[in-house]
Image 1: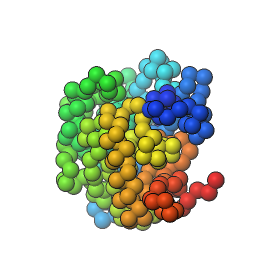
Image 2 (image 1 turned 45 degrees about the vertical axis):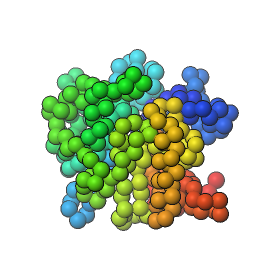
Image 3 (image 1 turned 60 degrees about the horizontal axis):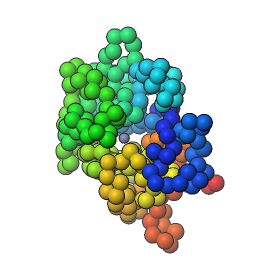
Image 4 (image 1 turned 180 degrees about the vertical axis):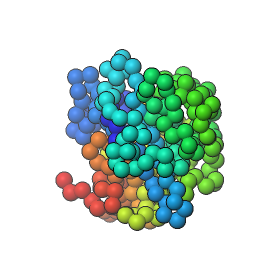
Length: 277
Ligand SMILES: [Zn+2]
């Protein structure tokens, strides 16, 4: 399930020079690159639970914000699910890897009377992540929507998650700290339709971030991001797993391969089949 927007290409690539990243992500007149928010629905056959991982940026944006971030107009998240043939009331769990607006903006519907998109679901959020979102630092304070978090606390169900706790049926989780405090990395180890998958979202947002050293200026701790990415690639290589590329507009996944220079991630489809250029 996708929603589209755009962010500054330089901020997305930290210290990487534009001539290098622009080959992969062409910039528009405002230096923005096209991005998506790729939410994932996980059905657990054993329990019947249905987990939505991320809710995307949503549609509750002002004209000014739409102009800055290029949000494509479209349906709210529950309507996107209906269009895909899924009854949104059947979503039992919403896992939010972190609470930046391009991951959690879809928590609240865009109508005149804002309401939670998934009032019946249990919202699973990292304990340190929520604490940070409610008391952010000056660098990433603009990435949160305090009104949405207050509404979720008031009207919704939140389960604060610590590493080692069960995350959701069929989905396990780890923590990462380079991008922001206590980001959850969900893992789906048993899949009917492909090898194991991790969903590192902003740890590896697009295919140009598959290289450990290509980290975003948005990261609070860029060297930690690089180390976490390197460790994740090693773990995925050991089990033949891959990652979902949450923000890449064209390539939905990447899978581990060892071509003799050590493990690396290469662009692929969600079923694990490689994309040949
Ligand atoms: Zn983020």
